[in-house]
Image (cartoon, rainbow, N blue to C red; front, side):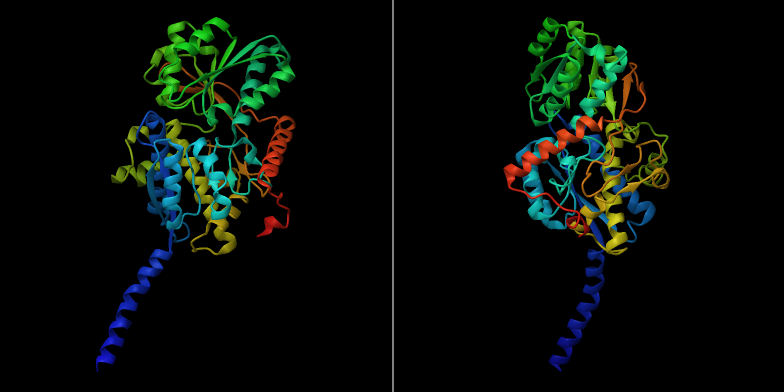
Length: 438
């Protein structure tokens, strides 16, 4: 009798446990590295909110990806590399299949780790510029652009303003940059363009986090450059604009990278930032369908991550785009490895290497106008280099240029040379076409 009761009890437990196990197996986990504290929090917070809200949208509107619910857990890094690595180590064992490190320094630290863990990194618009070469950097995905493509686009834009790239000869271009891996990344491309066009490149580092820039702007006043390129992040950007105003440097001659051109960078400066320009990878505003869907399915139901009026801002939208591409990599992987299944890191990598988001697919996602089409491959981990310039009018951002594409004749040899050098240092063998089939 005791045996029968025990067997019956075990059977009952299994009946209850089985659905729980199935439910758990149907969850795709996304680790979210964030920085909601510290000097970079005004920029890091909307980025993080956009990612969270997109996950909530997919669950609320679509029921997940082919029935697979999306889950997430945040880990605060404070933008610090050591904390970022700690977060990665803590979250990777919870079923993580892709990471957005949300910082170039953290990306550098994780690049050597992810090949062993077989977890891809999405570093949209940041990270190592050379990692566009998927033949060497098998797990890094600098989707939509790198710091080299950004620097290239800025020089193209300045050349256009001057009436041709040849007119840059003899001009002075100052790079005011965050003295970190992030800030130093564009220098090789700017030096290459300097050789080609004969302008003088003045490099002015700013110690992180960038709240003290008096000496940097005294140097700007002394050098009197024709243009200033601002490679800042967080509080450094608004401080730079205030210092430019104080020293009388024209904001209309200042051009920021896409991490120096969002609402937190200019709103406290207001009219003082009028005329300032920056690159942008995505649109902003609440008119896109995906933004309207988030307002309807997430915020109007009291499930929004941050303030409603932040939805659609530049960095919120960029966070949303990053998360959307991660989700689409999962969806793409399911097409090959099984719809309705949870994807592993290796499978999501395949999805990231086979993204094919044309206008029709972007429309289906509500992303029309938000980003341009993107198509990746095993060897091209970037997929797109489209970027525009927008200008602050004292109250809002307005696009002020056509789309630019990075010059592949300059970019590709630089990327290959840097990737080959990295492969030699790390004793890596380039992937072959056969390697890309798995």
